Image 1 (cartoon, rainbow, N blue to C red):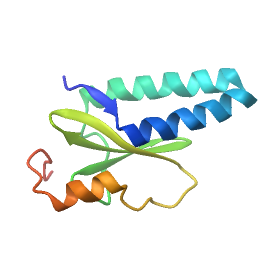
Image 2: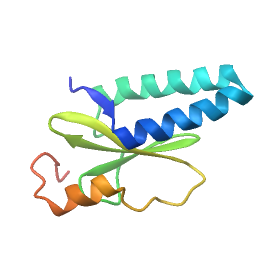
Image 3: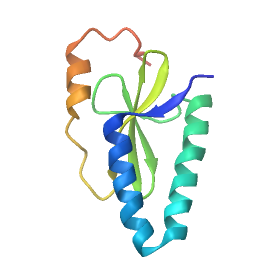
Image 4: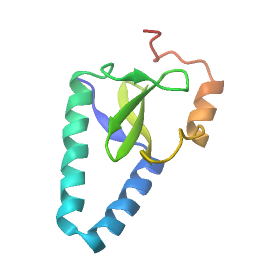
Length: 110
């Protein structure tokens, strides 16, 4: 089963939101962390269970109120970006744009 990790930018984004939420409702912040951990377990077992993303080699995971963008990178499932579900589809984060320009050996065309 592949490992699941957050990219640095996704981790920073998530930690900032958790910090904001914890100031308002610490239990809600804990529940959101627990939901992300459960989502990571599901993704490790079923990485292709979600719809294809807008960027080649990515997938979009709905985890209300958040949307995750995942991709395979070096044999690891990476949560490359996280955004609030109320936001429009994000433009490609810088690190995804760079990966899109490089040959993609790990992405599947399913």
